[in-house]
Each structure stands twice: as structure tokens, then as C-alpha cells.
Image 1 (cartoon, rainbow, N blue to C red):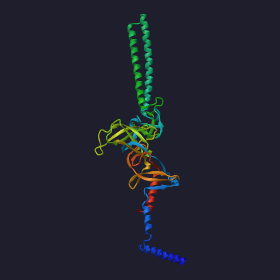
Image 2: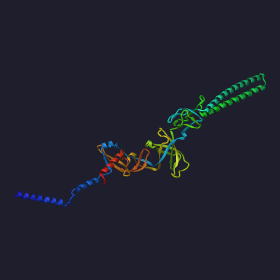
Image 3: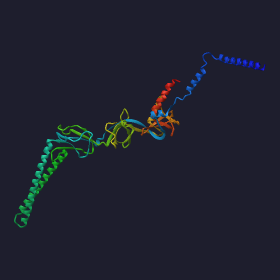
Image 4: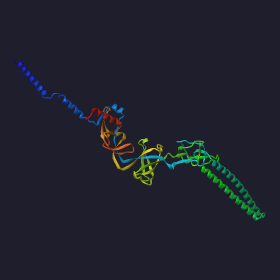
Length: 404
């Protein structure tokens, strides 16, 4: 009896439980039973941080991503101005033909290093040949005058001895002395003629032994231009070669407000971020009415020979007061959604890392290829190389997730 009663109770409880479940299901709107799960998934995506991206150790290696601690630094904001390197005209020689003639030899080519006094070219000239002949004539005249003087001197000495012995008249001695003085003057004239011809030969660069004009380097330098070939006929004053000192250049740039003696810092795009210095020497006498700038010429000491004439430069002119912030390399800064960002790093124990986007403000560019920024702190670990790969992965993740 007791057993049957318990069975009945279990049957009634089961019926009530089924009814309760059915009642609950019946209260739900039809076709929306999966909505809570869907809502949960949507909520999970919305909760994901779209400014982070994670790399495995292999991805870090393949993308060449490197990081380092950010360092504090001080820099001054600067403006960038275009400039140009030129040869230093004070250290440039345009070697020209002193007289019309035919080029015999050219002993230097463009780019050759030459030394002071080195013969660069030779020219045969009628005037040079004539000057050489004049020198030979003057030398012969000097020898003749010297012989005449020696004879006159000996005659005067003999006359003076005879006068002491009362063997000749006083007039004979006076005549001998006069003839000696005339011979002395004639010799001096012959020597002066030789000096005049030698000066002409030296000015023309004529070799007394050959009669050829020798064009020599005035200082150590490099041949910048060569405008003749052997056998060509050149006129007096024609440029044969140009030699310049490569260790000294001029920098031309238009700048607002600067003084003679100031220093300029500049870079050359083709040489990377390496900076060079120039000392302002001359300023244009007037200010440009349109740009309100003054064209200046600065002297550049070209140690190492990295710089070349006609190179374009970027002059960095410091403006304002020094600022303090955190210095990061140019390669660390990326543009995301129109804003400058860097990526901070949180490495994991497996060799991977999470990269977090941090917006920064650029305050100034520095000489060594770094930029002074605010938005991160000294000691923050940031991506220094491979930041573009991190940015690309972040953008790719956003595209996969779709619009929010």
C-alpha cells in the first residue's frame, strides 16, 4: 500500500515539473530562443580592446620587431629650410692658358687628386718661344757686358799703377775709370733685361729648357673640370682645367634672421640622418621682399669627403626654447587614423608579446634621427623596429572584426 502511494506521488511530481517547463517555454516569443546566446557573443566582441595586438615569438622574429626602453631627452624645435652645397670659390682655381697656343699634353682627368706645383698641362706658344729666345739673347748680352767690365776694370787698375809711377797722364786714368763705370752700367742693364724676361717666362709658366708653357696646380685639390684635349688650339684666357679643394665647401641658404659667425646645422637626404655644421661668413645686403629671408653663405669643413658640390641639403634652424620629453626613433612612430602613435610592449613568457597602441604628440625633431614626444613616459618599453608590421597587423585585425 505504501509502495503504491509513493509511486503515485512521483507520477504527480513529474507531471507538475513537465508542465512548469512547458509553461516557461510557452512564455518566450517564438523564433527568439537563441537571442540570449547571440547577445552574449556580441557583448564579448564589443568588450575586446581594438588598440592591442598579440604576436607569437615566431611572428616577432619574422617581422623583425624589436623594442627598447624610451629615454628622456631635451631638444629645441627647429624649422627646415632648403639649401645647396657649392664649391668654395676662395679655394677653387680655374687654370687658363696665358697665351694663345696648341695643347701638347693634359696630365689630369676629372676626379684626379693633384698637388701644389704639379704640372697639369703643357702648351706650345709662339710668344713663349719668342720669350725664351729673348732670354737667351739677354744671357749672351750679359756675358758680353761682363767681359767688357772685366777689361775696363783691368785697364783702370793698370792706369792707376802707371800714374803712381808717373808713366801716364791723369787724363788717361780718368778715361779708364769712366770706361769702367760705363761697363758696370751696361752689365746692370743686361742683368735687368734677364730679370724682365725671366719674370715674363714665370708669368706665362714657360719652361726655360723647352720653351713650353706649363700649367700647374696652385694648391692640393681635385680636378673638377677638364675642357681641352691634346692637339687643341686655345686662346689666351681659355679655361683648361678647374681644380678645387674638396675639404672646403660653401652652403647657400635663405634664412630668416641670422648673423655672420652663427653656426648652421644641416643634413643631406642622400646621406641619411647624419648632420653637418657650417659657419656663416657672408650675408646678402638686402632682405627678400617676398620671403622675408636673407641669403647667406656659410663655410663647410668637409672632413671625410662625404659631401659633394651641388648636393641639396636640409638646414635645421633652431627656434624657441628647449623642450623636455621622451625621445623615440623616427621608425617607432606610425600614423594610425591620422594620429601619431607608438606601440608599447608587454612580453609574455613564451617569447611572444602584446603590443598596445599609444597616441603621442611630436614636440620637436632631434639631430640624431629621433623625435621628442609626449604621451609616453621615460622607461616605457616601446617598439623601435618593425612598428609598421605591428600597425599592419592591428589594421588587419580591425578588418576581420568588421564595423562595431
